[in-house]
Picture 1 (cartoon, rainbow, N blue to C red):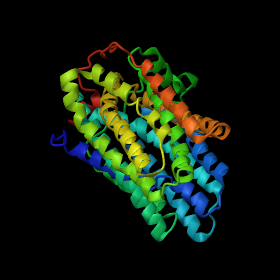
Picture 2: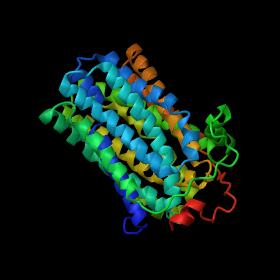
Picture 3: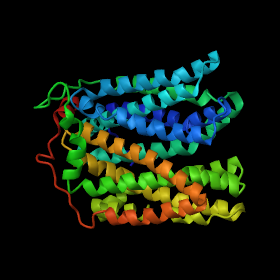
Picture 4: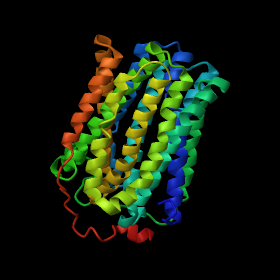
Length: 419
């Protein structure tokens, strides 16, 4: 998969994605650490910071989907990178000057969250324009492998930098990564035409704001995957902070053991992304998504049975390795399938609606599972999340509901111009 050339333009796009992905994972949980170490924030404030940034960022991003749809995508992506650069850079600047506050962290989290959603919507449309349809799986496989590599390397390096240099170091590095990403997108070159507005008015109305959700819910091909992927990501992320409390608190694991438990299994993402293409060729798109999508829901329940010591650490590594390997197969195949189901004038709005729903669901579930853990215990809440994850496989379609787009074999205008 990695040996296939997709052209100079894609290589610049991939490089921009890689540098920003490493920067993002380098700063993983950085705001929580800054709030704790620099601002003496308590558990409630840290939870509010994590949930509010996602939830409010998602609400702010609602009008961005229609705004992005009928604009050139690369200038939008560059603008979102620069916004994230400026917002994140304000944190180390305020820290050095002694002005940093919890309110500033909250505002920056919201701005970055909204910019993330707009960038994701624009990048999906940009990828569809840059890459031929038969190469989309290869491209998405490379993004998936890059994501898991960054996930494995970023957090350990980021926490080490925080320990050596200070709590805002990784945030500054993340800010610079977005500046480099903007430069990489600018280097793609070629002429990107302005998308036709069709009947959409210059200023989006209420109907346009909801068009992404309307398209998803009306599509028998996308609708079941929408509910499945949103719930799966929400349940996995809701249990994540509870697992940290269980391992680092009740079970007495050292921080380096916690980092090892989630760093080593990321190799499964690389393995899965490499397996996706041969599995697709042998079994077909629908069967791969159904099987990998079902299997990725079967692992998390095992986290409720962690015990202290090496046996418990091995169990976490084994569970996470299985989960991440299945995700490594499912994610690029599904990302390709989703792009194939979207006409060029619906990509940005649909991806924006998808991302907004996912982030809002994660925020809501994180809060609910925090309350659930308080009423019961972290282990019980993790077990409930694992049981509900098993049920999400029922949402996956048992039969292929694909409805190919008309003239799907023809390149959209953007790709014809860039070729």
